[in-house]
Structure formats: structure tokens, C-alpha cells
Image (cartoon, rainbow, N blue to C red):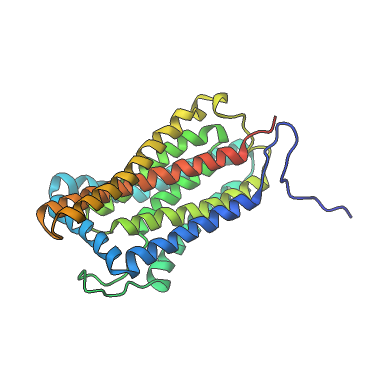
Length: 301
């Protein structure tokens, strides 16, 4: 009986798939998660940077002008994300006449949400470094994981030519959700980064299964084939992603070197660094994911 080989290289008009890159991607995301946990939770320096950003949010954003929109967003977030995901699942099921792929995307979403709760409450601990009063572990953020994982699932369910546009929407939505938890003082920037990485890990795993399941459907002809696949959409994520992360590093370095910790200027600077970091991390990861999926599902000519 002849066995079928996994579709690593397709013929004309089919995607060139190399699962090793997906596995390496998942390992890289897991490594980044571990590095973030070690750097921001297990070390005093990282805890201090994270805590100063949280204190900055409490000092400068503890007003109705900032808190009311954040509370409204987080109050509507589960319902909005669930509705968007349900619409995407229904549309994909009707278009493909297949429930397997929507089920895979939903499984990835559920695994991300469940693993965040497991990591936060069972696996990981936050050692007390005498830096903050709150010693209970909050890494990763559950609210942010829910939002980011839902957007990743919507991204997976979109046709490849729509994914660059979906990535822009998902990245900005995830950034808004993470920013809202930060403004309210519920989570530190590192907690939000960890949530993005959890969503990215399960998104890669679910994406690989989907691409292997339906390699033909995941084929597309490149950025010029459809307006929603234009390179400009990914650029809208790369710019705030790179500038946000770089800006956060520069602001944090300048503030730490020039101002006394806990001073008014220091708290404001760390607040700015935290906001830049959150927006930059969400934008960068969704841009990277969009570029990776575009590369792995592009048609061979």
C-alpha cells in the first residue's frame, strides 16, 4: 500500500510548504516567552521596570478620561471577540463546506486561553523581590490572551488574500485590549507581551495543521493579486511595531539614566515606554505572523 508524503513542495500553483520553519517558529516564540518570564518576572531589574510602568499608569491615567474607555472596552471585549470569531467560523464553514478547519482554529483559540490560565495560576510563580506589594503572579494576561487569540483565529479562518488586512485589524485590536488592561492597572507590560506570545504559539500550531489539511485552499498569488493583500497593510503593522519597540527601549534607557526612580518624570517616562512597548509588540508580532503565513502559502510559479 503506497503512503502519501506530506506536501513539502507543491507543483505549479500550489504552496511550497516546509513544516520545519513552522516548528522553528514555535520554538522561537516559546523561547521568547521564557526569556520574557526570566527577564521581567524572575529578575529584580525586570520587575522594577515593569512595576515603574504600572505605577506610571496609576499616577497619570487614574482618571475617568482614561479609565472609562478602558473599562468599556474590556467590558465589551469578550462579547465582541466572540461575535467576530463566530462570524468568521460561520463564513468559513459555509465557504468551505467543511467544519474541520473552523474546528482547528477554535481549538487553537481555546488552547491559548486555557494555557494562559494554567501558566498563570499553576505553572509560573512571581518571586517577591521587595519591589511591588502585589506578589501574586499575573503573567500572562488573561484578557489580552482572549483578545489576541480570537484575532489570530479570525486571521487563520480568512482566505490568504484577506489575511494581511485581517492582521492589521487583529494587531490593533490586540494592542487596544492590552493597552486597556495596562491603563486600568490590571497588568504590567510584560504580562501583555506574554499573552501575545501565547496566542502566537497556538496560532502557528493551528496554522500548520490547517495548511497541511487544505494546502490548495491556502494558496495565493502574492501581494498584487488582491487589494486586501497589498504590502501597504503589512507596512501599517511593521512601522508601529519597529518604532514602538525601539522607542520603548530608548525612552526606558534615557529615563533610567537621567531621572531618579519613582520621580514624577520617571513615572511619566516609564508610562510612555510601557505604552510604546505594548503597541509595538502587538503590531510587530501580527506583522511577523502575516509575513510568515504569506511566505508559506504563496503559490509556486
